[in-house]
Amino acid sequence: MIQYIAHVSVSKKLIDVLLPQNVTILEMSIEQLESYLGRLGLDFGWLFVFDRRKNALPMEERLSTQVVLTQNQRAITVIRA
Image (cartoon, rainbow, N blue to C red; front, top):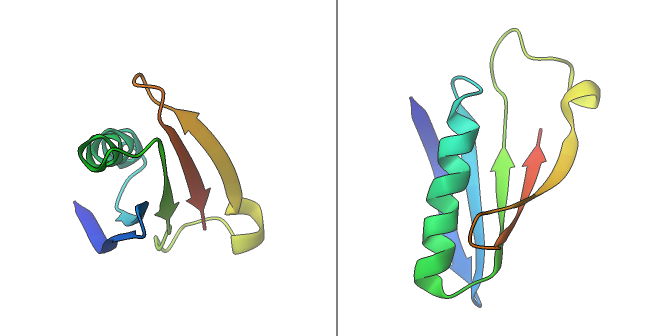
């Protein structure tokens, strides 16, 4: 199950927020965000992933940033918290 808090495009910038129930959702979310970027004519966007599971690692251990380049050469910055 995917829970989205927000999906906003501000001044042609795309930010997506994801509250995943499992880690396999990340790939699907990147594909979906890549599709949104294509429709908006954008080359980059951000995906914020908040892990709210009870057994999640402590915040200090799970914080990370990664730039994913899609097949269509769009850059998605994934921020995990």
